[in-house]
Length: 383
Ligand SMILES: Cc1ncc(COP(=O)(O)O)c(C=O)c1O
Image (cartoon, rainbow, N blue to C red):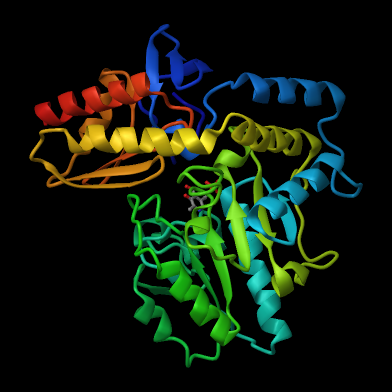
């Protein structure tokens, strides 16, 4: 009997060690991790520079609270703001918390504009987290089932549909639009190239805040440090988590211009947020991404993987969706059974409906990419 609550359904394997893209089970067997702990361990498991930074910081200072200045947090805020062209940062511990901060900021923006029942537009099939506000923002009834009453001030519109957003411009209660640049959890849905540009124009014309949830797409996952950089835009609010700490829990809510002034003393906080350990770790992550040209590797390996996947002969493949190392292979049939079949072949993948989803570490090399391609070929052949 397990003393854990039943909200997860773990597969029948336990890992005890990791190195690069590989994990070792309690049985001493090696698995190729093509999921990175759901897009978290971008630099691979136990990257030596990250381990060294954690060890050093653990020996110096773990935690003091935000009642005192935290040097590494201030440095990290500066680095992230400079990289993202933002002005200020707030640090939390998870993606949901970063989004929660963003949602609270929109309330403050609304009240300062005398809007008493503010509404945020979010997208169908989006995923923004599991807190009450973020699951209400999430455009997926499965995530919301059983948790009514939801926070009602979200209107869900179709993703990648500019007109669906325009349709709300005469609603004076709308104050913000919150989107993932690429929808991750619903199966790597990549919008039209200029979708975010068009949405930003609408936001600017209506004094709406544009919130981009880059919890999954951020920190190099798509081949740029932030996915919205493909559009050459700067959102008002940008949320990050997952890859930021390479496995150490840290998230960030960055803001620009008037949005950066919304949080004032006492309006928000987090006991652990941005403590010395997690901040130092995130600084080490940003350093490795730069020093080791990780973005170049993402783009090279992404192209290599795409070529390999396109060459697969399976007539079950309907579409391959890929941006950097966010990958979905959509099939013409349900493929839930592939989860365990892949595990038997020592490959960790995710299945989203009819799609195989991969989020391999950003350091993936060609040999490892070949293993993924060959294993998928075998799996599809046996389906
Ligand atoms: C786009 C996006 N936003 C928010 C979250 C929630 O992050 P967390 O599980 O760290 O709260 C996720 C998690 O998958 C995500 O993909």
